[in-house]
Length: 291
Image (cartoon, rainbow, N blue to C red):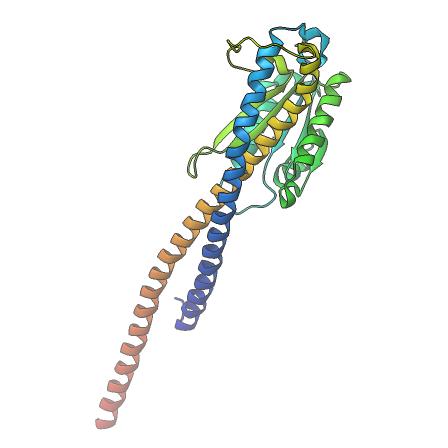
């Protein structure tokens, strides 16, 4: 049975932990506000680019741009995985890593068996997980979210596009968390190359006059589209991470509160037992003296 000193030490430790988790929750809440604003602001631009590309692709010969052409056979796949750099965010990383494993080993099982699946890992957690397990990692970006910048998204899409153009991969899929609400992130595996297969939505009913020409415009839009879509996904994942961390720290704070309540009850019971024991010993000693 723990002594009064042991219980006091544990109570002190739990109080200290509670203060840390409460502070981390407040920090995550502040970061979430900024991350959510950035993600929401990126959505309209990304959606409009997708809509324009869908409209233009119906008016040009897509074979003129190799990034718009669907390959007849998919032998090699590149998976871009977006995770966080740090833990203490609940099941955020675990869930997205499980989805990435499913995409690699089940959705593209034949390619995986033939060594045709490679990965680009954005974020330390995913990079460490798949590197330790011997997956083929084309490039890793640990520490990405320490200083999240558009140039990183541009670099990743340039790498993926170059691999696609060289014939090193036939399809590029991004696995990430899409931010919907604090309690409900959405796990997604979204194909970004070839673009003709990933751009969705109805062709615009509006008729535009294109200058200089649809083909020239589409050549300019394709890299912008890829950069913008991946940047949006990274912003969505960052917002979802902060929401998960805030929720996890809130749960930890509440658990610490409940644990403190239980420890205080145990402390009071142990103290009462110690006092009762001392009184019994005093009474027994007095009786012995009388005898």
